[in-house]
Image (cartoon, rainbow over all chains, first blue to last red; front, side):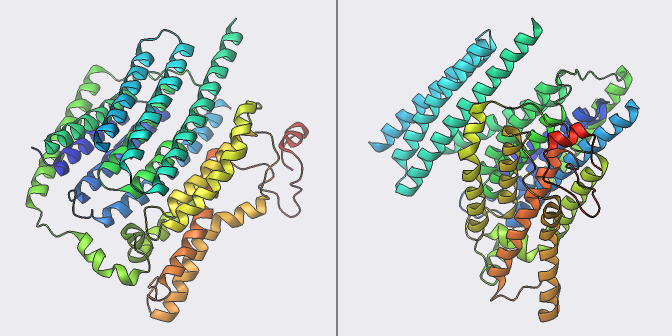
Length: 94
Length: 95
Length: 328
């Protein structure tokens, strides 16, 4: 059968494609933000799939650390994008 | 012997989760769906927790699993209450 | 037989994940999209657990599903039933679809080729060989806070920058009405439990899955829960103290790094005898900083009286300040 690494890498690529398509299609901020987060989840999945070594061997800890950093940075970037969006709306309303 | 008991518990838990999900999809109203989710999922979780406790040798992990089950039940009860409260308020505002 | 069952499990998990992502990105209702995104975050946590990444499963469940979900839900609070139709022309949609598909095919070819050509060298062997001198026994914590400590320092800087942006641009969102007494009752016992669990996660990160980020996010979740249950309560922390808590993580990290540079000729090169203690100190400061940062990000902007210069009277309630016309 297809190896787990390849299966989850393809899943990550699929997630990235779905997110990318939705980012390019929408106009509003919020759907694009959700789609970018989905892209990010796809990239993390590719990292962890490559780091996975099987049931017996320990998984690679370096991609794990990188993805952990990535998760925290993604949520900070989402918060910043929401703040920018809120401010833009307030400016547009004036 | 313990393996079959554990598998029995886990599979009946799965059945409860499955029926809860069918209830979520098929029932007509928000409140009846909440009813299905809160009740069926909690019993399903209790059975799965029971199955895992049977399989797990260390006592400290069994205690942790029971605590997790209690916390999930409390959280599910409070969330269902909040969702129902919000839905009731919206219905009242619409009239 | 076991292999077959694991393959079925993997394929089912992947299919559900892709279906959730597709529905999140193509649904029309904004509330539904955010809810499905939270569900996708939880499913992703299960995927991390399946791929033997328990630290990531913890972090994804707390940060990706919890904090991110709370952020998005509070952002759409004022307009929860917006519809998100796309207005692109047929031609543009066709171009976007075909380009994305082409990119995905190219990436799949690259992934397949790359996985086939790998030479089997895994970084886990190198990390394992250096683990005794790192001061901790959890390899992910060792990588995060010792071998690649510089990345973590810069990550704390990124979080601080994002929170500074949030604070500069907006004032905090308006408080909502008082919440249900059931929620208040649950918060009374849940928040202390969350604080204790966060401290446990911080401590246990040295030898089991856990660490500063999970602990900080759980602390932030406890604060968000407090904010939801008691919205009009006066602010618990002095604004001055909040500013100190925000920077203490990165400050501690840099001071320890500079001190190690004075001892060992290299920035952030921990002496192996003290590495465990130093990592714990850095993680504790980082936990507090991350919790403050994520809570302020959820609040959405400056709390009342943040930009006060000189004497600021922070013992008034928020409500009386709103009635009297804003910060002075």
